[in-house]
Length: 138
Image 1 (cartoon, one colour):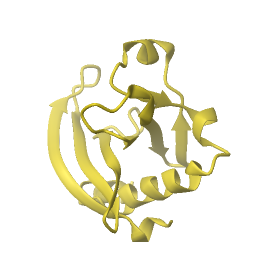
Image 2 (tube, one colour):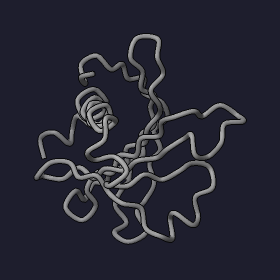
Image 3 (spheres, helix red, strand yellow):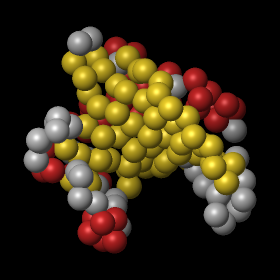
């Protein structure tokens, strides 16, 4: 799978003021698919202050049907900064708070067959979501 074969459908966009820097933070939602296969949905959160708050991409994949068990749906976070992308671990507080999906960290994704699919989804979001295009030049 490569990022070019992934389709992206942009969803809602919300803008709020950051609590710490009072600059505008944008949260963009969207869906990912390949052909007729639904891959998942995502959020891209970014601020006017890229140095202090680099873009954070969170991809939610797995079985999100109403009665699906939590261990069959996952959330994975990646930060996008000037050096590239970095898969993040979830804090213990986040892990304790999250009740609707299983948070996956670096060790859960890296060196697995899923890693290539995950990075293709990240690339598709960065390259295809029009709301992120202004970030390419920074």
